[in-house]
Length: 142
Length: 294
Image (cartoon, rainbow over all chains, first blue to last red; front, top):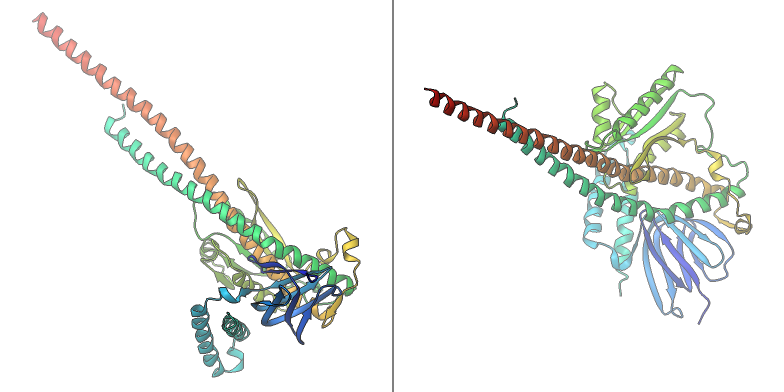
Protein backbone atom coordinates (compact mmCIF):
# COMPACT_ATOMS: atom_id res chain seq x y z
CA UNK A 1 0.00 0.00 0.00
CA UNK A 2 1.45 3.27 -1.11
CA UNK A 3 1.79 6.18 1.26
CA UNK A 4 -1.23 8.44 1.13
CA UNK A 5 -2.23 11.99 1.99
CA UNK A 6 -5.56 13.26 3.21
CA UNK A 7 -7.34 15.41 0.66
CA UNK A 8 -10.16 17.71 1.73
CA UNK A 9 -12.11 19.88 -0.65
CA UNK A 10 -14.26 22.43 1.14
CA UNK A 11 -16.45 25.26 -0.10
CA UNK A 12 -18.12 27.89 2.07
CA UNK A 13 -21.33 25.92 1.77
CA UNK A 14 -20.19 22.37 2.48
CA UNK A 15 -17.44 19.77 2.50
CA UNK A 16 -17.34 18.41 -1.02
CA UNK A 17 -14.84 15.60 -0.62
CA UNK A 18 -12.49 14.02 1.89
CA UNK A 19 -10.47 10.93 1.20
CA UNK A 20 -7.03 9.37 1.54
CA UNK A 21 -5.42 9.73 -1.87
CA UNK A 22 -2.02 9.22 -3.45
CA UNK A 23 -1.83 12.31 -5.59
CA UNK A 24 -3.63 15.61 -5.98
CA UNK A 25 -3.31 17.54 -9.22
CA UNK A 26 -4.61 21.09 -9.00
CA UNK A 27 -4.73 24.07 -11.38
CA UNK A 28 -2.65 26.95 -9.98
CA UNK A 29 -2.22 30.38 -11.50
CA UNK A 30 1.01 29.32 -13.22
CA UNK A 31 -0.07 25.88 -14.37
CA UNK A 32 -0.89 22.53 -12.86
CA UNK A 33 0.75 21.33 -9.70
CA UNK A 34 0.94 17.72 -8.58
CA UNK A 35 1.17 16.95 -4.88
CA UNK A 36 2.46 13.66 -3.55
CA UNK A 37 2.82 12.51 0.04
CA UNK A 38 5.68 14.12 2.02
CA UNK A 39 5.29 17.35 0.10
CA UNK A 40 6.73 20.44 1.77
CA UNK A 41 4.23 22.81 3.40
CA UNK A 42 2.74 24.97 0.68
CA UNK A 43 0.07 27.58 0.14
CA UNK A 44 -1.01 28.42 -3.36
CA UNK A 45 -3.74 30.19 -5.26
CA UNK A 46 -5.89 28.12 -7.60
CA UNK A 47 -7.50 29.33 -10.77
CA UNK A 48 -10.74 27.98 -12.18
CA UNK A 49 -10.09 24.59 -13.69
CA UNK A 50 -10.07 20.86 -13.22
CA UNK A 51 -8.71 19.23 -10.10
CA UNK A 52 -8.11 15.51 -9.92
CA UNK A 53 -7.08 13.03 -7.28
CA UNK A 54 -5.55 9.61 -7.83
CA UNK A 55 -5.74 6.69 -5.45
CA UNK A 56 -5.82 2.90 -5.27
CA UNK A 57 -2.28 2.55 -6.68
CA UNK A 58 -2.99 5.35 -9.11
CA UNK A 59 -5.63 3.25 -10.82
CA UNK A 60 -8.62 5.33 -9.78
CA UNK A 61 -9.04 8.97 -10.68
CA UNK A 62 -11.73 11.38 -9.60
CA UNK A 63 -12.32 14.72 -11.28
CA UNK A 64 -13.64 17.92 -9.79
CA UNK A 65 -14.58 21.25 -11.28
CA UNK A 66 -13.08 24.07 -9.19
CA UNK A 67 -14.02 27.71 -9.63
CA UNK A 68 -10.80 28.98 -8.10
CA UNK A 69 -9.60 29.20 -4.53
CA UNK A 70 -6.62 28.17 -2.40
CA UNK A 71 -4.72 25.05 -1.58
CA UNK A 72 -2.72 24.36 1.54
CA UNK A 73 -0.42 21.40 2.11
CA UNK A 74 0.67 20.61 5.63
CA UNK A 75 1.93 17.27 6.92
CA UNK A 76 0.29 15.02 4.36
CA UNK A 77 -2.94 16.94 4.49
CA UNK A 78 -4.16 18.87 1.48
CA UNK A 79 -6.93 21.37 2.07
CA UNK A 80 -8.55 22.84 -1.01
CA UNK A 81 -10.56 25.98 -0.28
CA UNK A 82 -12.73 26.45 -3.32
CA UNK A 83 -15.34 29.12 -3.96
CA UNK A 84 -17.35 26.39 -5.63
CA UNK A 85 -16.53 22.78 -6.39
CA UNK A 86 -18.41 19.93 -7.97
CA UNK A 87 -17.58 16.27 -8.46
CA UNK A 88 -17.70 15.17 -12.10
CA UNK A 89 -20.64 12.86 -11.43
CA UNK A 90 -22.63 15.58 -9.72
CA UNK A 91 -22.47 18.29 -12.35
CA UNK A 92 -25.92 19.34 -13.46
CA UNK A 93 -25.19 19.37 -17.19
CA UNK A 94 -28.57 20.73 -18.20
CA UNK A 95 -28.30 23.62 -15.79
CA UNK A 96 -24.69 24.37 -16.66
CA UNK A 97 -25.61 24.51 -20.33
CA UNK A 98 -28.49 26.91 -19.78
CA UNK A 99 -26.36 29.08 -17.52
CA UNK A 100 -23.60 29.10 -20.09
CA UNK A 101 -25.93 30.24 -22.85
CA UNK A 102 -27.29 32.95 -20.60
CA UNK A 103 -23.78 34.14 -19.73
CA UNK A 104 -22.71 34.10 -23.38
CA UNK A 105 -25.72 36.18 -24.29
CA UNK A 106 -24.92 38.74 -21.61
CA UNK A 107 -21.30 38.88 -22.71
CA UNK A 108 -22.39 39.50 -26.29
CA UNK A 109 -24.68 42.30 -25.16
CA UNK A 110 -21.92 43.91 -23.16
CA UNK A 111 -19.40 43.79 -25.98
CA UNK A 112 -21.45 46.36 -27.88
CA UNK A 113 -21.52 48.79 -24.99
CA UNK A 114 -18.87 51.40 -24.25
CA UNK A 115 -16.27 50.39 -21.66
CA UNK A 116 -17.77 52.46 -18.87
CA UNK A 117 -21.08 50.63 -19.04
CA UNK A 118 -19.67 47.16 -18.83
CA UNK A 119 -20.58 46.74 -15.23
CA UNK A 120 -20.41 43.16 -13.98
CA UNK A 121 -18.45 41.96 -16.96
CA UNK A 122 -15.85 40.26 -14.76
CA UNK A 123 -18.53 38.44 -12.87
CA UNK A 124 -20.17 37.39 -16.10
CA UNK A 125 -16.90 36.14 -17.49
CA UNK A 126 -16.25 34.14 -14.33
CA UNK A 127 -19.74 32.62 -14.57
CA UNK A 128 -19.09 31.63 -18.14
CA UNK A 129 -15.77 30.08 -17.27
CA UNK A 130 -17.29 28.17 -14.38
CA UNK A 131 -20.00 26.71 -16.63
CA UNK A 132 -17.45 25.67 -19.22
CA UNK A 133 -15.33 23.89 -16.63
CA UNK A 134 -18.32 22.09 -15.20
CA UNK A 135 -19.27 20.84 -18.65
CA UNK A 136 -15.68 19.86 -19.36
CA UNK A 137 -15.45 17.87 -16.14
CA UNK A 138 -18.79 16.23 -16.79
CA UNK A 139 -17.27 14.75 -19.94
CA UNK A 140 -14.74 12.92 -17.76
CA UNK A 141 -17.38 10.65 -16.37
CA UNK A 142 -16.40 7.08 -16.89
CA UNK B 1 -73.27 42.61 30.75
CA UNK B 2 -71.39 41.44 27.67
CA UNK B 3 -73.46 39.74 25.05
CA UNK B 4 -73.11 35.93 24.92
CA UNK B 5 -72.81 35.84 21.17
CA UNK B 6 -70.09 38.54 21.12
CA UNK B 7 -67.96 36.58 23.58
CA UNK B 8 -68.41 33.40 21.57
CA UNK B 9 -67.27 35.21 18.43
CA UNK B 10 -64.17 36.54 20.14
CA UNK B 11 -63.25 33.10 21.41
CA UNK B 12 -63.52 31.69 17.90
CA UNK B 13 -61.41 34.46 16.44
CA UNK B 14 -58.68 34.12 19.08
CA UNK B 15 -58.70 30.39 18.53
CA UNK B 16 -58.11 30.70 14.82
CA UNK B 17 -55.31 33.21 15.39
CA UNK B 18 -53.63 30.91 17.86
CA UNK B 19 -53.79 28.13 15.30
CA UNK B 20 -51.81 30.30 12.89
CA UNK B 21 -49.25 31.38 15.48
CA UNK B 22 -48.79 27.82 16.65
CA UNK B 23 -48.17 26.61 13.10
CA UNK B 24 -45.70 29.44 12.49
CA UNK B 25 -43.94 28.50 15.68
CA UNK B 26 -43.53 24.92 14.51
CA UNK B 27 -42.37 25.96 11.04
CA UNK B 28 -39.80 28.30 12.57
CA UNK B 29 -38.53 25.54 14.86
CA UNK B 30 -37.93 23.29 11.89
CA UNK B 31 -36.21 26.07 9.98
CA UNK B 32 -33.87 26.99 12.84
CA UNK B 33 -32.50 23.48 12.69
CA UNK B 34 -31.76 23.71 8.99
CA UNK B 35 -30.24 27.15 9.33
CA UNK B 36 -28.03 25.92 12.16
CA UNK B 37 -26.84 23.03 10.04
CA UNK B 38 -25.89 25.46 7.32
CA UNK B 39 -23.81 27.46 9.77
CA UNK B 40 -22.17 24.24 10.92
CA UNK B 41 -21.28 23.16 7.39
CA UNK B 42 -19.63 26.51 6.72
CA UNK B 43 -17.33 26.08 9.68
CA UNK B 44 -14.63 23.85 8.10
CA UNK B 45 -14.09 26.40 5.35
CA UNK B 46 -13.92 29.30 7.77
CA UNK B 47 -11.42 27.49 9.98
CA UNK B 48 -9.17 26.51 7.10
CA UNK B 49 -9.41 30.03 5.73
CA UNK B 50 -8.24 31.53 9.02
CA UNK B 51 -5.38 29.06 9.19
CA UNK B 52 -4.18 29.92 5.70
CA UNK B 53 -4.58 33.64 6.33
CA UNK B 54 -2.53 33.48 9.51
CA UNK B 55 0.16 31.41 7.84
CA UNK B 56 0.45 33.85 5.00
CA UNK B 57 0.43 36.85 7.33
CA UNK B 58 3.47 35.53 9.18
CA UNK B 59 5.47 35.56 5.99
CA UNK B 60 4.35 38.94 4.81
CA UNK B 61 5.51 40.92 7.80
CA UNK B 62 4.16 44.42 7.81
CA UNK B 63 1.96 43.33 4.97
CA UNK B 64 0.52 46.11 2.94
CA UNK B 65 -2.61 45.63 0.99
CA UNK B 66 -5.29 48.16 0.05
CA UNK B 67 -7.84 46.31 2.19
CA UNK B 68 -5.57 46.50 5.26
CA UNK B 69 -4.75 50.18 4.91
CA UNK B 70 -6.65 52.53 7.11
CA UNK B 71 -7.57 55.66 5.23
CA UNK B 72 -6.22 58.78 6.95
CA UNK B 73 -9.49 60.63 6.59
CA UNK B 74 -13.01 59.36 6.96
CA UNK B 75 -15.42 60.92 4.55
CA UNK B 76 -17.75 58.20 3.45
CA UNK B 77 -18.59 54.80 4.88
CA UNK B 78 -20.79 51.91 3.85
CA UNK B 79 -23.15 50.12 6.19
CA UNK B 80 -24.50 46.72 5.22
CA UNK B 81 -27.81 46.25 7.02
CA UNK B 82 -29.18 42.73 7.19
CA UNK B 83 -32.86 42.30 8.00
CA UNK B 84 -35.50 39.74 7.12
CA UNK B 85 -37.94 39.70 4.23
CA UNK B 86 -40.89 38.93 6.45
CA UNK B 87 -42.23 40.35 9.66
CA UNK B 88 -43.80 38.71 12.72
CA UNK B 89 -40.46 38.12 14.35
CA UNK B 90 -40.53 40.45 17.32
CA UNK B 91 -37.83 43.08 17.66
CA UNK B 92 -35.55 41.31 15.15
CA UNK B 93 -35.66 44.01 12.49
CA UNK B 94 -36.29 47.04 14.64
CA UNK B 95 -33.09 46.41 16.62
CA UNK B 96 -31.05 46.26 13.43
CA UNK B 97 -32.63 49.36 11.98
CA UNK B 98 -32.20 51.27 15.24
CA UNK B 99 -28.49 50.41 15.38
CA UNK B 100 -28.06 51.32 11.74
CA UNK B 101 -29.70 54.68 12.26
CA UNK B 102 -27.60 55.40 15.33
CA UNK B 103 -24.46 54.52 13.43
CA UNK B 104 -25.39 56.74 10.53
CA UNK B 105 -26.30 59.59 12.88
CA UNK B 106 -23.07 59.31 14.86
CA UNK B 107 -21.01 59.33 11.70
CA UNK B 108 -22.96 62.24 10.30
CA UNK B 109 -22.18 64.19 13.46
CA UNK B 110 -18.52 63.87 12.53
CA UNK B 111 -19.15 64.91 8.97
CA UNK B 112 -18.99 61.40 7.53
CA UNK B 113 -21.66 60.43 5.07
CA UNK B 114 -22.89 56.86 5.01
CA UNK B 115 -24.16 54.73 2.16
CA UNK B 116 -26.44 51.87 3.06
CA UNK B 117 -26.62 48.47 1.43
CA UNK B 118 -29.95 47.00 2.43
CA UNK B 119 -30.56 43.27 2.65
CA UNK B 120 -34.14 42.17 3.25
CA UNK B 121 -37.45 43.76 2.37
CA UNK B 122 -37.89 45.15 5.87
CA UNK B 123 -34.77 47.30 5.63
CA UNK B 124 -35.60 48.42 2.10
CA UNK B 125 -39.14 49.41 3.09
CA UNK B 126 -38.07 51.18 6.24
CA UNK B 127 -35.30 53.17 4.59
CA UNK B 128 -37.45 54.23 1.65
CA UNK B 129 -40.12 55.36 4.09
CA UNK B 130 -37.48 57.46 5.81
CA UNK B 131 -36.45 58.92 2.48
CA UNK B 132 -33.06 57.18 2.40
CA UNK B 133 -32.27 55.43 -0.83
CA UNK B 134 -29.99 52.40 -0.31
CA UNK B 135 -27.07 52.22 -2.77
CA UNK B 136 -27.86 48.56 -3.29
CA UNK B 137 -30.79 46.42 -2.22
CA UNK B 138 -31.06 42.67 -1.96
CA UNK B 139 -34.36 40.93 -1.38
CA UNK B 140 -35.44 37.30 -1.07
CA UNK B 141 -32.00 36.08 -0.04
CA UNK B 142 -32.38 36.31 3.71
CA UNK B 143 -34.02 32.91 4.07
CA UNK B 144 -31.39 30.89 2.20
CA UNK B 145 -28.31 32.99 1.60
CA UNK B 146 -25.78 31.57 -0.86
CA UNK B 147 -22.09 32.31 -1.12
CA UNK B 148 -22.76 33.98 -4.45
CA UNK B 149 -25.03 36.50 -2.69
CA UNK B 150 -22.32 37.24 -0.14
CA UNK B 151 -19.80 37.60 -2.92
CA UNK B 152 -21.88 40.11 -4.80
CA UNK B 153 -22.34 42.23 -1.66
CA UNK B 154 -18.65 42.01 -0.79
CA UNK B 155 -17.51 42.75 -4.34
CA UNK B 156 -19.04 46.20 -4.42
CA UNK B 157 -17.58 47.34 -1.09
CA UNK B 158 -14.16 45.85 -1.83
CA UNK B 159 -14.09 47.60 -5.18
CA UNK B 160 -15.10 50.94 -3.72
CA UNK B 161 -12.69 50.67 -0.81
CA UNK B 162 -9.84 49.83 -3.13
CA UNK B 163 -10.71 52.80 -5.32
CA UNK B 164 -10.70 55.06 -2.27
CA UNK B 165 -14.36 55.98 -2.60
CA UNK B 166 -15.17 54.75 0.88
CA UNK B 167 -13.09 54.77 4.04
CA UNK B 168 -14.70 52.03 6.10
CA UNK B 169 -17.38 49.37 5.85
CA UNK B 170 -19.54 47.93 8.59
CA UNK B 171 -22.08 45.18 8.71
CA UNK B 172 -25.06 45.22 11.08
CA UNK B 173 -26.69 41.86 11.68
CA UNK B 174 -28.25 39.60 14.29
CA UNK B 175 -25.75 37.20 15.74
CA UNK B 176 -27.17 33.79 16.51
CA UNK B 177 -26.33 32.97 20.13
CA UNK B 178 -28.77 30.13 20.66
CA UNK B 179 -32.28 29.24 19.56
CA UNK B 180 -33.81 31.65 22.05
CA UNK B 181 -31.32 34.49 21.83
CA UNK B 182 -30.11 36.81 19.11
CA UNK B 183 -27.95 39.85 19.49
CA UNK B 184 -27.85 42.74 17.06
CA UNK B 185 -24.20 43.51 16.36
CA UNK B 186 -22.00 45.81 14.34
CA UNK B 187 -18.85 44.39 12.79
CA UNK B 188 -16.13 46.18 10.90
CA UNK B 189 -15.58 44.64 7.49
CA UNK B 190 -13.08 47.10 6.08
CA UNK B 191 -10.33 47.90 6.62
CA UNK B 192 -9.55 44.32 7.64
CA UNK B 193 -8.35 44.45 11.22
CA UNK B 194 -4.79 43.29 11.51
CA UNK B 195 -5.38 41.34 14.67
CA UNK B 196 -7.44 38.71 12.81
CA UNK B 197 -4.26 37.79 11.00
CA UNK B 198 -2.27 37.24 14.15
CA UNK B 199 -2.10 33.59 15.01
CA UNK B 200 -3.60 32.56 18.30
CA UNK B 201 -1.35 30.24 20.30
CA UNK B 202 -0.37 26.81 19.00
CA UNK B 203 2.94 27.95 17.63
CA UNK B 204 4.14 24.43 16.91
CA UNK B 205 1.78 23.75 14.05
CA UNK B 206 2.71 27.11 12.57
CA UNK B 207 6.46 26.60 12.77
CA UNK B 208 6.62 24.79 9.45
CA UNK B 209 8.40 26.53 6.61
CA UNK B 210 5.83 27.20 3.96
CA UNK B 211 6.32 27.61 0.28
CA UNK B 212 4.12 30.08 -1.52
CA UNK B 213 2.98 29.92 -5.06
CA UNK B 214 3.37 32.44 -6.67
CA UNK B 215 4.50 34.56 -3.65
CA UNK B 216 3.21 35.14 -0.14
CA UNK B 217 2.21 38.70 -1.00
CA UNK B 218 0.26 37.58 -4.01
CA UNK B 219 -1.52 34.86 -2.09
CA UNK B 220 -2.49 37.47 0.48
CA UNK B 221 -3.81 39.70 -2.25
CA UNK B 222 -6.22 36.98 -3.34
CA UNK B 223 -6.99 35.84 0.15
CA UNK B 224 -8.15 39.10 1.72
CA UNK B 225 -11.14 39.69 -0.57
CA UNK B 226 -12.23 36.07 -0.06
CA UNK B 227 -11.90 36.60 3.67
CA UNK B 228 -14.27 39.56 3.50
CA UNK B 229 -16.67 37.47 1.44
CA UNK B 230 -16.73 34.74 4.07
CA UNK B 231 -17.41 37.36 6.75
CA UNK B 232 -20.43 38.59 4.83
CA UNK B 233 -21.58 35.04 4.14
CA UNK B 234 -21.33 34.16 7.80
CA UNK B 235 -23.33 37.26 8.81
CA UNK B 236 -26.04 36.38 6.29
CA UNK B 237 -26.32 32.86 7.64
CA UNK B 238 -26.34 33.92 11.27
CA UNK B 239 -29.05 36.40 10.47
CA UNK B 240 -31.13 33.70 8.77
CA UNK B 241 -30.88 31.41 11.80
CA UNK B 242 -31.59 34.33 14.15
CA UNK B 243 -34.66 35.30 12.15
CA UNK B 244 -36.24 31.90 12.65
CA UNK B 245 -35.24 31.93 16.29
CA UNK B 246 -36.79 35.34 16.84
CA UNK B 247 -39.93 34.30 15.01
CA UNK B 248 -40.25 31.19 17.07
CA UNK B 249 -39.99 33.15 20.32
CA UNK B 250 -42.47 35.76 19.12
CA UNK B 251 -44.94 33.15 17.94
CA UNK B 252 -44.59 31.15 21.12
CA UNK B 253 -45.50 34.11 23.30
CA UNK B 254 -48.35 34.94 20.90
CA UNK B 255 -49.69 31.39 21.24
CA UNK B 256 -49.33 31.54 25.03
CA UNK B 257 -51.16 34.85 25.16
CA UNK B 258 -53.89 33.46 22.97
CA UNK B 259 -54.53 30.45 25.18
CA UNK B 260 -54.56 32.68 28.23
CA UNK B 261 -57.06 34.94 26.52
CA UNK B 262 -59.23 31.98 25.59
CA UNK B 263 -59.30 30.84 29.24
CA UNK B 264 -60.38 34.29 30.41
CA UNK B 265 -62.97 34.62 27.68
CA UNK B 266 -64.39 31.17 28.35
CA UNK B 267 -64.70 32.09 31.98
CA UNK B 268 -66.63 35.25 31.28
CA UNK B 269 -68.71 33.37 28.71
CA UNK B 270 -69.73 30.85 31.37
CA UNK B 271 -70.39 33.60 33.85
CA UNK B 272 -72.58 35.45 31.38
CA UNK B 273 -74.45 32.27 30.54
CA UNK B 274 -75.01 31.53 34.23
CA UNK B 275 -76.21 35.06 34.81
CA UNK B 276 -78.68 34.73 31.93
CA UNK B 277 -80.04 31.48 33.34
CA UNK B 278 -80.38 32.99 36.82
CA UNK B 279 -82.21 35.99 35.42
CA UNK B 280 -84.54 33.72 33.51
CA UNK B 281 -85.36 31.61 36.58
CA UNK B 282 -85.93 34.72 38.65
CA UNK B 283 -88.29 35.99 36.00
CA UNK B 284 -90.24 32.72 35.90
CA UNK B 285 -90.46 32.52 39.68
CA UNK B 286 -91.51 36.16 39.82
CA UNK B 287 -94.12 35.59 37.11
CA UNK B 288 -95.54 32.51 38.88
CA UNK B 289 -95.73 34.36 42.18
CA UNK B 290 -97.57 37.20 40.49
CA UNK B 291 -100.09 34.75 39.02
CA UNK B 292 -100.72 33.12 42.42
CA UNK B 293 -101.41 36.42 44.06
CA UNK B 294 -103.94 37.31 41.47
